[in-house]
Length: 362
Image (cartoon, rainbow, N blue to C red; front, side, top):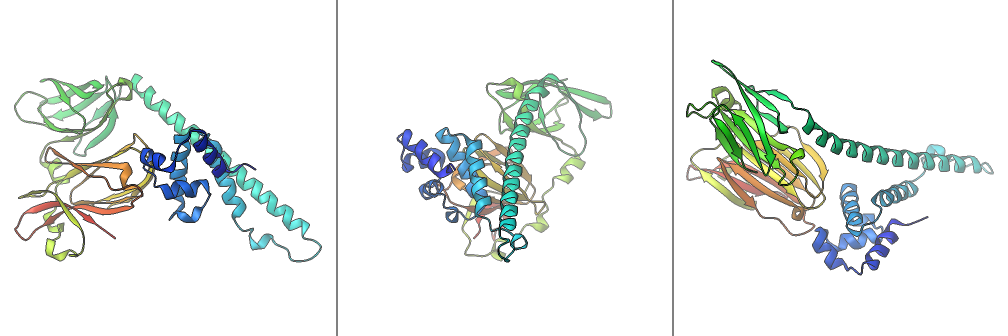
């Protein structure tokens, strides 16, 4: 039976590559690359790391990633102990449990391969659907809740006002996000948060933030968040100062980096841009935790009123950008292979000012 480790090693040697070069290109530590070729699962702190790095390494070498993952799953199944209930210790009837064990292994391998193929098919279907959406215009109704969606050229957004409905039409999704309004066409750049006056009365009615827009393919649309700027909407996204901890109440041994300071606290947005594969988990304002495996080109946007807890399997693969009060702040990346656990949150310092900080956690 083929070995996924041998395939990776042979591919690397065929391309005359060393671990140092590959580590620099993929942001995977050299000891992990060596462990993948030696099929040493004990070198990884969990299976999500191993699976993510294995896919990334295989794609980098140009190997058949589906085949690599099938071999890995088969190895996992083969090394798993046969359930005690299938083992019969009587002699000479050992043939029956042996056959049952082999059948169980074959069935399990078949199920795993089937799931892998179905998942791959679903991913392809989702990509095709994303492109197909651009040909069908949608109509969105704005309410007191923020509207987060991927918009395509021709989509319409309805803003209800006391004098009647205002119709906004998406006019551009290439390079920048364009909205055609009764007051004229408004353009918003990537990672920009802008207040928009849609009816020309010199009072902004909307806050628009663009988290993703392609410079080349207009059919990919643009990911944006639109918030109605009124008293109700502001109350929903309001930062509760009563929930902001005082600096002196926090552990003093934590590494703390100040991103910005102000006389008040307000909601902020974090953009996570991925340049290689890693497991990423986040939890805004102590709400539900979201976790997934992301690869090169993926973008995750999260908005919080008080704080966000982040967990990153490889800090070198993610670029973080904080957007607050219409200003953006780029955060540095860590060294390759470093696991990052941190809070990005508001605190109230002893000088009475509110500070948005990064608290590194153990």
